[in-house]
Figure 1 (tube, rainbow, N blue to C red):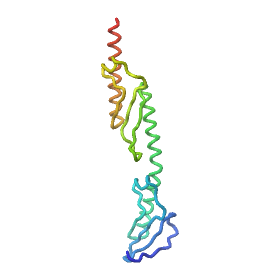
Figure 2: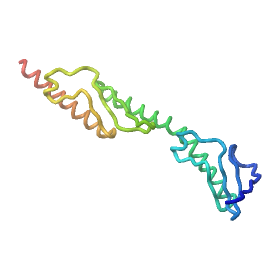
Figure 3: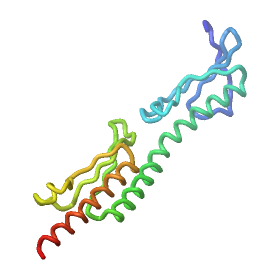
Figure 4: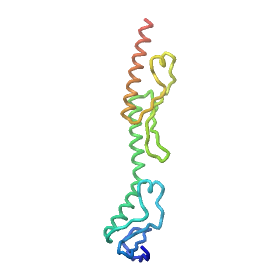
Length: 161
């Protein structure tokens, strides 16, 4: 592409400059940068196409990726909060937290007891904190802890008789 020729394309989204290479291929470059989040979602600033329609589709795809990158995290955060609320209702002795990687992508789960454990509870196998890769594994671990707590209380109640 030695001498690109700029094209007058009024129907393009703002911030896109379109040109045609010496070989006849259509190219577009976005003059405004995408955000880091949008770029991480795959939005590219330079696209090409065999013809104007293919180029318009490529540009639309990049703008779509950019838009979704900003909208989807909010929807994911709302879904995660709903999961946390449900888990905390089902397991009221625990504070549930969803971990995130540095780039904001959801990671594992933790559950931390609200009240400290006694020595006898620790001996019975109760843990102050649980960590799991996914919600299903966390629910399994919480269920095991609930059963251990019930068994510990039953043994303690039986010993006092």
